[in-house]
Image 1 (cartoon, rainbow, N blue to C red):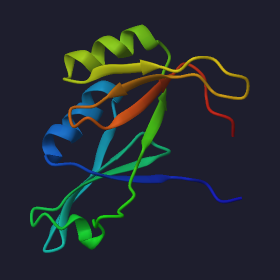
Image 2: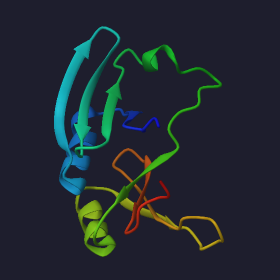
Image 3: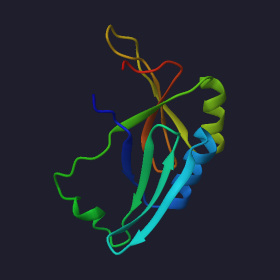
Image 4: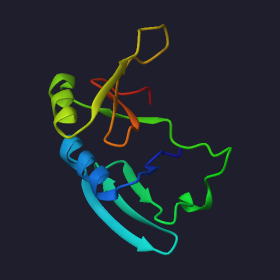
Length: 128
């Protein structure tokens, strides 16, 4: 079976975004790249790779157009949502919403990072 192990997210400020995920979720910086097509910082939790992308020329890696579709949200499993909420807010993130409980829907607490990107925080894993 294939396994999801990489998410890439475009951000306007690589260092600010990387510092957020390093300080809140203790992700480790595993790589950096600068190139004519864009710059990147790769982070890992040991299982998933989150690569932050920045395109100084504004072209978004030549994929942004009127119909461009990108990342909607992603999620972290944590041991303590309350403690994680404090870390998120201290790092510049903010609470977004709590999903209501519906049958078959994994309820999570949603936050926004320093760039407004939505992510979930849950004390349980998603169905695997």
